[in-house]
Length: 524
Image (cartoon, rainbow, N blue to C red; front, side, top):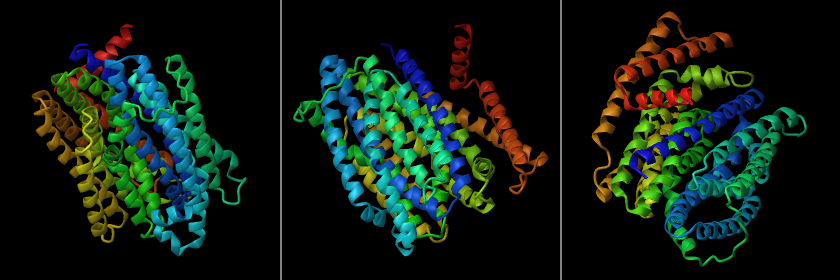
């Protein structure tokens, strides 16, 4: 396949994942609006977010963040250099092994929930009621890791077979489940927020159930296989531990922030959670979409020895990400308070909660470029099956995060924790980019720098459009909801017109590609 054809595969797959993720994020925001309206930002929500973050962190590390990215390069190599049957045999072994590990991890998590919560949120020990609630919710939700990590393995198999829609749509089911259980069951429990925990478990089971029909249709019929000494499993195992740390650095840093936030004033954990949810929109829709789409292509190019094409795919993927991430950064900084206000300010979530969440959003957004770029840089290392470099960079990044968190958490409160996470992620990206450059040579071409420069110019014009809107329509956090929605809608519309209009005038390659896709869709 030509490099142009591989780029089209990446772009097409990124589009599928991006659209599915956008739908998931829309339902995710509806979910968070429901949670904010029913439970606000206080003791109960802090307990829930701590309890939910524990299995969610393990899911991203053990499932999506390590097993999936360690599995895809080896599985893809078997597909390309051996046979489909041998690749599916490896997948069956991986499924069997992971299922056993996850049952043991889930049982240990339920039994050790008091210890886990003590380590995760030591500040809760000062409030026995909050601590007990967090332990109770953790015990309900910990088995979620079993379902969702198996979903992540299915994602790795289906993505390697170039099917992206079903895994990307799975989170929609989780969000719908949490919304419905909150609305229908919140009066059924002594602690109303228990309904959310029930929704998490139900959503996890449903997400796994929706993958199997697609797996069968794709011919990926897996059976129990206990041949754990299989050479492919050994290679996956050698990649697993360093990948666990390297790919999960962002989540580990968020995890550290949660621990320290439990020591800060009431609501700090919730402020960081809601801000992280807003940052996850561009991160999930574009960065994770491109990273997910590029990994099978990069792995296939390495398996075939096409290293020049490999470098071009890295550059192309980074251009796609930054074309959206750069303006998204400017928009989130400029409109952080209106965005948080419109999304969450209702019911128990007041103007004070909006301001505190917007503060966290500002400091998270500073690192959005790093959170985004790392998805592709990590994919490059995983494709090369380099297990040492991500581990080294992750170790340095963790040290930076802990040091800066302790240094900044008291003068800047929860905002300092968000800033430390951003700085640590930037260190991770810069170190890995340098190591990758030393390993494969220059991988950013002149087209990359031209694309970034044009995106920066268009983003500056967009920022000017935001300023002009405020001259005619000043922002007021205490205004009625419809007035706040009108301000945000007007600002976003002006920003989109300014950015894409300027990109069109500058003949941005990404803008031209977008128009070509639209033209082909209209003709078909």
